[in-house]
Length: 168
Image (cartoon, rainbow, N blue to C red; front, side):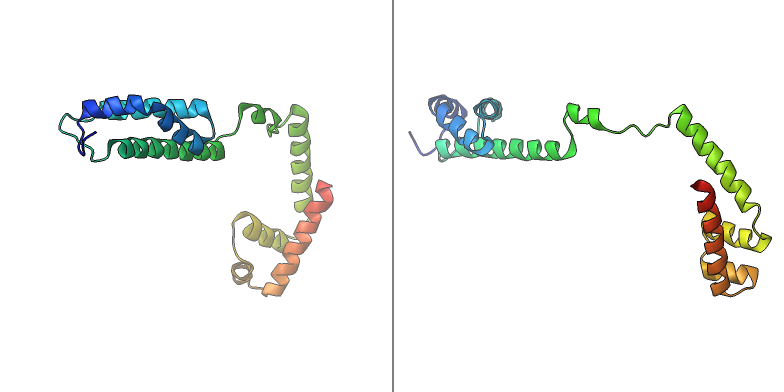
């Protein structure tokens, strides 16, 4: 064959070395069926070449096109297996939707905790609310209430213990 080839010669060369192209793709993909798909994709790529295209080494060009497509397919499959799980794996996912019984228990616990918090001294309750509900730091709570950060730490601890007693 000559040093240069036109698209028609390239297509004839493709047909002549199709099994080699498939084997090259299969080495990358590890599957002859996927390799067949890649070779078919390579054929379409070659068929789309403009009339003025020429390859200096047609067989090497065809092998490179096939290898590149096989590598792309392999990367895509790796990414998809990382990103997406098999459908059967979804059967083992725990449903976090509460049952009516769970919802009722949660509501009762919340009412108990709210009742327990209402028994705390007003300043302790306010320190707890500022820190846990409004996101203030202990230093900010101390400044707001005009007390030491150590006292704020104890007040928050006492409120948490009160909540934990009711939640258990």
